[in-house]
Image 1 (tube, rainbow, N blue to C red):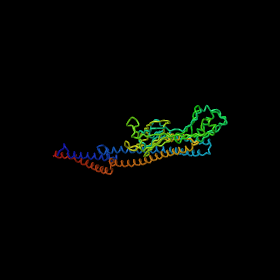
Image 2: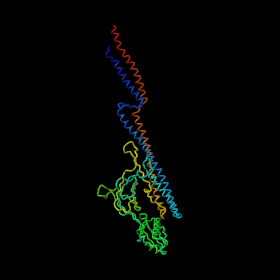
Image 3: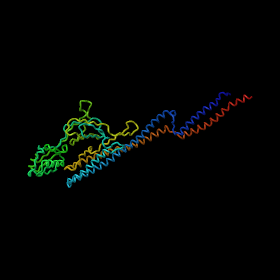
Image 4: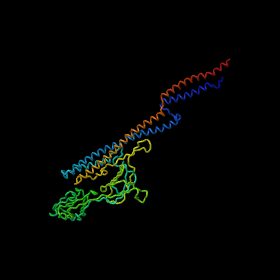
Length: 469
């Protein structure tokens, strides 16, 4: 029997300490709800759950980003609906103006409403915003850079890179010249009186009119007939207001005397021509730099409308541009991958979606010079507005496709988030039934160990009985 070393008490105390430790761990899990509260609980499980937690937080934010993207698209689509309604109203007005029951004043009033609608379309394009970010001014569209072009745009299918065209001939306006200076025109005599018809618009030349008055009458008729007339101090020269093979200039003079007075033939007709352009293909050098190749393929085709050209290819490729008047030579068109809005729709790097929204102002829709006050203006306006309406409808259809995709993206993110959360729960969350069983067991063991320790501490007292005898 030893009194200096109570082995029984030491053994019981050690077991009690282990039981208390296990009891404390069970209580911590029960109170926190987590199976892993410290790195030593499960090192590998902690590392795995940490990565999963990062993914889940990223998925939550990506879902919010997706919903924000849907809101952006809905905002843009709402504005474009109004633009479409305004274009439809302008088309109705153009149809109305095409009826010859309307007087010049009637058409002027119609044009006034069209001008206001054009201004409103430009305003909507410039001011439609989401969180101060402009949506319809072209800042969210593919950026295209080029010299010697006045307008350029590319669809999403146009791969970023350099595209080179060679303008062999610029579009030509129809033109006619009299060789007589307006300042040299004298007073109109009775024999010289008559009419001059410019593309169907008549200028009445009356007896007694001065040269300035004759010029003014010709200028007004030219404007109504969609033609241009030279300045008053130059020789009388007429050009069509439009470029291209469809642009014509027709002048008819009612009498030989008036024809001689103006220096014009009694009937003169001229037509313009479209530009002529070559598309530089990948196997052709466009500069001295051998690595600088144009990306146009052999299947690319080009259509013309004066200096306005459109290159199309497979899979929705469309590059639309307008060349400067009179320019001849090479033009490098740089299409970039910048501009489109990038939506972060995933929790990791490069899990993005590009959203491109083209400009919708009157210039990009090619209706900025739309007029119904000229002879052929209403008919041309109808055709121009048909194209503009088609373009707006195509843009809205693209936005609808974006929104549908984002709806599915949002649903997918929700499902992934749910599955990831369930997986992490199996690693980190405590099984409350199991932990309660462990707690109960350890609690009973603690009480038993405490009782036994008390008895073990009584053993040295037995040595007193030996000393007393």
